[in-house]
Amino acid sequence: MRVLALLDGTLADPDAPQIRVDDLGLMRGDGVFETVLVVDGKPRELGPHLDRLARSAALLDLPEPDRAAFERTVSLVVDNWTGGREIALKLIYTRGVEGGDGTATGFTLGMDISAKVRAQRADGLAAITLDRGIEPGLAERAPWLLLGAKSLSYAVNMAALREAERRGAAEVVFTTSSGSVLEGPTSTLVLARDRDLVTPPSTLGILPGTTQAALFRSATREGWTVKVAPIAVDELHAADGVFLVSSVRKITRVHTLDGKPLPDSADLHARLVELYEAEY
Amino acid sequence: MRVLALLDGTLADPDAPQIRVDDLGLMRGDGVFETVLVVDGKPRELGPHLDRLARSAALLDLPEPDRAAFERTVSLVVDNWTGGREIALKLIYTRGVEGGDGTATGFTLGMDISAKVRAQRADGLAAITLDRGIEPGLAERAPWLLLGAKSLSYAVNMAALREAERRGAAEVVFTTSSGSVLEGPTSTLVLARDRDLVTPPSTLGILPGTTQAALFRSATREGWTVKVAPIAVDELHAADGVFLVSSVRKITRVHTLDGKPLPDSADLHARLVELYEAEY
Image (cartoon, rainbow over all chains, first blue to last red):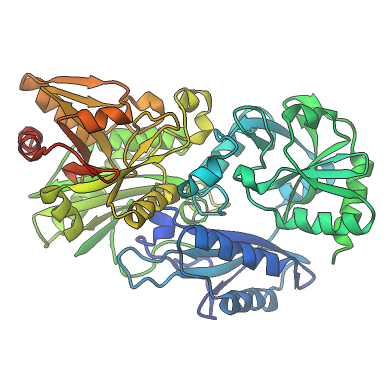
């Protein structure tokens, strides 16, 4: 099922047209978004998601999102949800219509979690590495490339996923041209080695992960060492486990990378899921 | 004024919502577009624009756009236009709604040319160079980066224009990190030197220009030499003229680059506009 709440605090029909053709979110991919998981009526990491939405909006010089209005859309969707235990909430915020009065377009759409994502949570997935064409230093040097923003301009991320499918895989690990690990098209990469968890730094031009942050918070309390540090592609093959984490996919293990099986991380995966779930 | 024609051959109200919130064009910037100029009821370079729309769609693995249906939307807008002599037509084609039956969303929106663009056509503009963060070879090596596609994921292009405004300029000339000239965020760069016209090759990961191609066609007939070749940023300062060309801006001269005045190219500009207009 799907429930749609607009930023003005009203519910609307997700099967009916709601957006004008000249909305800059559509015409120019000019807007930002967040995806939030709701379990048993409780949104997870809503604060960090709204923080990141505001940060992305600032990177795009958008007006600051009305936090209370977005919180209200989330409550509206959750309160009107009559489907299963989990909801994937998509919060969208665009520059509004071209030549308009500057009023942003904003809404939250609640959707079911797809069967594919649920299967991947349980079984893991095969991923490939793909060059993202960026190098360390670029994000800072060229902020107009919006490398740290979660913008609506995700055509490249979607193209990368299609390339993975063509190669018989389900997911992508983006890398720099020189072989340093970045992130997935819609996820954060976490590597496990002994009792260490490692994720690449967002200064490389990638998104700081909300789910990764929750996992690291919990892991730290349980005595794990957590690190934010560059990771070379070779290290993925040598790790105890490689995981793609995001709100909707939670902690999903990568069992095969570039066609090569990775060490069996099923037990490790169960342990990390436990750590993550302990946060809620 | 504005006139909107949908791909199914109907006219629709551009001031009313027409697009669902889960259209992938909005949610993911997952679609392609073209901008076509109409003068006195005649669309310019419609064939090359529809060719490029099809090429962009292929790069994004979209279903092939229905050419006849798009031609019909163009006729519909033109036939129902009661405004001025010129129309800017935006042709948009998206992947359709998420989880839908694969039917693309398509429409053509006719709009007035803004006063700003008309002033820039006459007076020229100031531009700045900005690093686009790509290097020669990347487009071919990493097709998933969609570097040659005119996609709806244009947030970076819009951010670059805002950066130009912050620096007191109106336009951007994107460059590689090593200082090779690429293109504008919504235009093609053409350099003039004696009786030579030069534009950078699309193999660098930029769009082949339709207006630039029309200009080169006409210039060749008139005995100019036209070249598709790499251009270093330094060459821009030494040229007789630097121009940003696109359907809507036609041939617009750059009078200032990175704060430095370029040689006066007003006469040269008039000559190139003559060459361009001779095509119609």
